Amino acid sequence: MRVTWWGHSTVWLEDSGTRLLTDPVLTGRLAHLRRMAGPSPRLPGAPDAILLSHLHADHFHCASLRAVPGNPLLIVPKGARGFAARALGPEMARRVVELAPGEETEVGAVRVRAVPAAHDGNRGPWSRERAIAVGFVVEGVARTWYAGDTGLFDEMSDLGPLDLALIPVGGWGPTLGAHGHLDARDGAEALRRVKASWAVPVHYGTFWPIGMGRVRRHMFDEPGPRFAEFAAQAAPDSRVRVLAHGETLDLEPAA
Image (cartoon, rainbow, N blue to C red; front, side):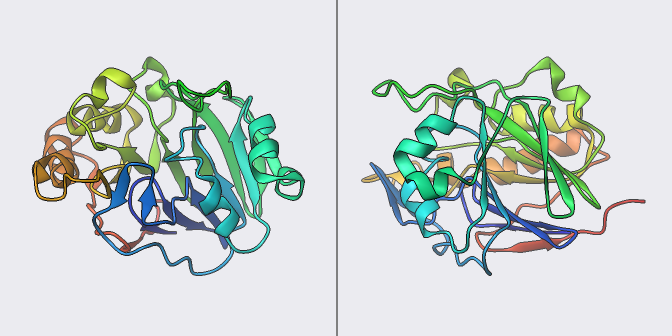
């Protein structure tokens, strides 16, 4: 069981010999955002599948999807198949697997199940593309929850117990909590609800608005360590590992 965080919500996950990639952003620039921490992702090979949580451009990044090697499955939320076909072309569209919460598919030796997320999954206010937002639970030798983008929701408690939770804890603005996101404190509450043995914070400290590289660094740097502090109080039985960009955590799931 191996997990590598490449910044923002891009995670390389290996379980039972199956290789998964979440919401890849492989570039140094995304609209008004610039990669301000960590190296550009260096994938170790071709994944078996890419898990895409929703249509927002910092999660469903078309240029990055085209750059991923191999011919991985694209596992997308209900409603996203049409956008994937239009944005990525017919060859990639043939590899799309669309899941609603509660539905699952097999990828190699693991099962991937879509689970709810409390987030607006549409492409954006300027777009007519509509789909739901989801998270994913991956079941192999471990049970791993990748939350995507989400706020707190009651059904979180139904997801556990887990071996690993990949929990978003920040972003690039001070008002994220008002728009279906978790901050460091709410991320710790999410960890308490899902009862994960291990947690890794994601979705923070990578892409910052251009022109803000020298100001308000705390807003970008602090969410991961702050999440660890809050989690020690809210979920003392869980272990938190704050990964550096490009760092790998090897886990041996509990029996």
